[in-house]
Amino acid sequence: MTQSGYIVDLRMRFPTESLGQEVDVAMAGRFDYGKNNTFSADGTAQNIVLPISGQSCQVQRVDVHLEGTTDTKNARRFSGLIRIQTSTPRPETCVCQAWFQYQAAVSSTESICP
Image (cartoon, rainbow, N blue to C red; front, side, top):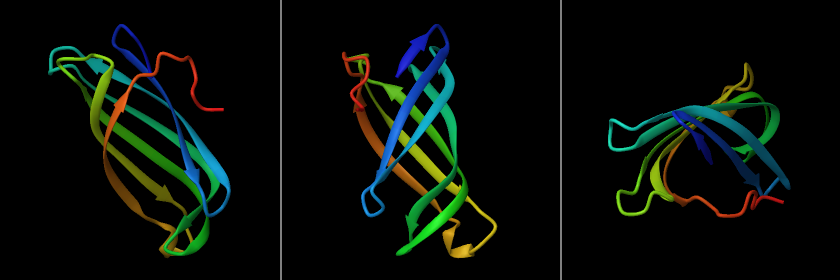
């Protein structure tokens, strides 16, 4: 995660262990200093295979939305909610939405993802 003024830039990697691949999502958003240091960011990935409901699904698009709040005692730590939603015309069983609560820390290393 990098921040420049009000602009937030996030890079996320989601592993799909059962398929042996990773999904990289670049996200952009906005930091709001007036609301307890909250931020949000959105990103997409396209044409990927994901394991959903026990099957391998060729998904046209994955939308990722992240909301977060920085820790008032340590600005390098933040927590919030991630929403992941798939979009594809068929089969319907490959369309899903998941919500996750998370806690994270900004790394001092430029990139910890190989």
